[in-house]
Length: 323
Ligand code: ATP
Image 1 (tube, rainbow, N blue to C red):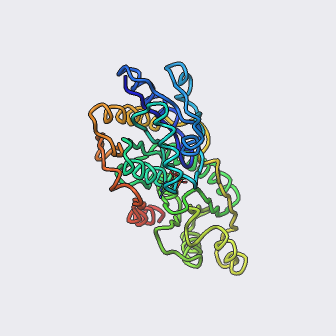
Image 2 (spheres, rainbow, N blue to C red):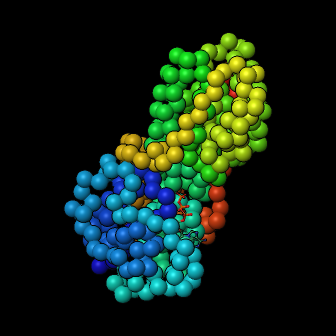
């Protein structure tokens, strides 16, 4: 019987549990023994690894976060840390690992592969910035949470003739801000991938006011050069000329939390099962993903250390739609 382990690593993302369930049940369906690792790579080092059965993953498909726990584990970045992790897996005769996580986690997967362990990565990050997949687990839910906030703020903005600047997660990649901004009809979107100064944002708001808009929304990714702080600073100095009263809302970790939507549950189920299928075919050291609508696999060596920026060209579409 083949023994495989599954872990969740890096930032939690809605849908991780559905992926854990799919890996566990997919492995059981093949007659394999699945194991779960608690707290990501930290659990591999600590040896918190236990056998899982179908009942262990019952009632989690709809839960947000990760029931396995996640952790940032600097020790694992060092070869000595990974040696300890590999020896803990060896002690249990575990032959392969499925890593559910984002960029850093899949770079860790690639290191384990180089050290001889078969690993399949499952892309999971709300930022959707992993190379090798068009869509990662958690991104769709995070966009919808952000969008709901935008829609609610629009109601109050329109009642008071205000502009709202809404900051959402995305330190290095503005995917959530871009998609939620387009879906929510934001007047201005600011991303880390793009150069936009507070004065330019203010100019767009001023122009919107002059075109007769009664309220406006600015959607800002937390890593944008024009962050909410910079924008408020500009507003304190030159606010009178903008036309709108400007308020700020930072969504923070709310964006990560809550139940995964249907799209993330289905995606996680498909990708978790695809990871098991890869191992069954002897295809390890890959990231499973969706490319052009189909399940695809990309060598982890190509994925490691690489990111996929948000499509900043869509900003022009958003700008035209904000006329
Ligand atoms: P998210 O995109 O949600 O932040 P992530 O997977 O990118 O998720 P990180 O904190 O970057 O999250 O990485 C998770 C863990 O992966 C780290 O704590 C570390 O243990 C491991 N890791 C990160 N980078 C490397 C690396 N270069 N080599 C080996 N392991 C790494």
